[in-house]
Image (cartoon, rainbow over all chains, first blue to last red; front, side, top):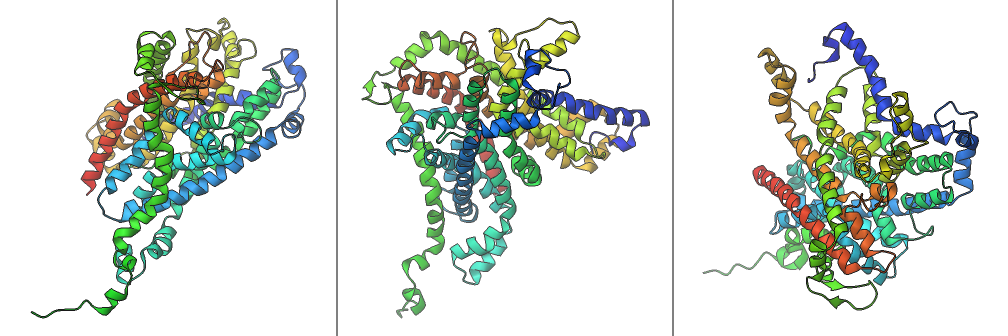
Amino acid sequence: MFPTPIAKTSRSWQITYQSILPLALIMWLLPLLAVALFSIKPDSDFSTGNYWGWPSSFEGFTNYGKVFLESNMPRYLLNSLLITIPTVVGAVALSCMAGFALGVYRFKGNLLIFFMFIAGNFVPFQILMVPVRDLTIGMNLYDTKTGLVLFHIAFQTGFCTLFMRNFIRALPFPLIEAARVEGVAEWRIFWYVVLPLMKPALAALAVLIFTFIWNDYFWAVVLTQGPDAQPVTAGITEFNSQYRAAYHLMSAGSIVAALPPVAMFFLMQKHFIAGLTLGAVK
Amino acid sequence: MTYVSPPPEARSRGWYKRNEIAVTPFLFLIPAVLFFAIYVIIPIGQSFWISFHEWDGLGDKTWVGTANYERLLFDDRKFTTSFWNNIKWLVLYLLAIPGGLFIALFLNQTVTGIRLYKSLFFFPFVISQVVVGLVFSWFYLPREGLLNAILAVFGAGPVNILGDPSTATYGIIAAGLWPQTAYCMILYLTGLNAVDPEQVEAARLDGAKGWRMLWYVILPQLRPATFIAFVVTIIGALRSFDLISVMTNGGPFGSTRVLSFYMFEESLSEFGFRMGYGAAIAVVLFFIMLGFIVYFLWSMWRDEKGAR
């Protein structure tokens, strides 16, 4: 293990390490802690200039209550959910199938198609903006959740296919051959042999895509406009202009907007990190 | 010569059954390839085409040849600023890699609660860039911001990072480095987990310690993690849009624009949509990226070939 395990070092360094650890964490999360502190402060603290002192009263419930009851926030959150979940389902479904095709079969153009998916995934997405916006308007889907979902599915399929294909590649191939010898139809092999083995990959991809899509901002502002379809990342700017300079409310709003992926991460941490670090170990 | 008739069951089986193994992959690929082609591959070509036109997004396109590119390269100060800002982003964003490695080395221990520490250090990456942008723009606020409150303790004067054209870009990059470093950290933590303990012990017996150990024994084993960290950092740097849009909206005086932001601004500008010009900027960005894409693909291709 590198660096030397702390248990094997001198007593003084052990104590130093144990005390540096929480300090470093506080330093690291300082900007975030500041926002959390803002979000429970009363309005009056800002007018009296008590920015960093102890809150003169605890107003967490009032502030967060306002976010949920007196703004468009719940609507934006619902939009985000209605955009994110279909995208996760769609992208995972498409890439499972594509990954199966690319991971199991040998045919001409296999690597070529695979590399098309990888390359498309690296492209700066600004180059897609004008045509995709035009296409979405042409399909009458501008400013709808469907328009956003369709694009997200397509774009995420690149990354997901890369992921799925490499995962399927690592499965024991004799299993598939055995099924073939038994005369099992190919689609049944996919459904009954490969898919059950892919559960960890499915979980990892689902949490990753959930986070990516929930946090998307660029496409939300390119393809949608108002509170009818915009997700929370775009809605937060409208929220902030509504409460200009009301830092306690803006802070509470931001925390609400950021929370769902955070919850997802803490619930499914193992899968999340497994997905994110795919390929970091050979 | 005896004529052997095909076995009866082969004749009765349908065309699909006989060609099952050859056909199935294509059936499985169709939906994904279709989606990907319509929304990703074809639009790349279309953007190239549009970049040779003047187009407001509604009416007819007017062919202008390379006029958009000529204007970009020789007659557009905003473009020059954006381009150099992109270079700054690319170079400074790479600091996330050593930064992430440093934190990973710091956290690669087994003490009680270390798992929670690791997740909390990783936490900034999970938050959307919009919120990161907001958090940092409040952190930098000249009057209410925590940064100036801390500086005041040390007697340093208030600074207005985002309000000053000479520091604003660096302020945004610092905000971007926060989640990116967390990402690199998690890559390296996973990599460190897989480092061969026997090699480390052997090197220790040979007297390797500290920096030399890190450089000659650990880093070579972390190569895959470094490669991925490099890929995601470069892509992240060139895609930077959210932070700029949220923190400064390109200002002050246009000093924080980057190509991706400038492209968006031109295409959907309030003074009429200039889609052709926007597309041209996107094409330039694409070519900057292409160099990296080719390198990434080449590395991956080499590994694939090696795996066979």
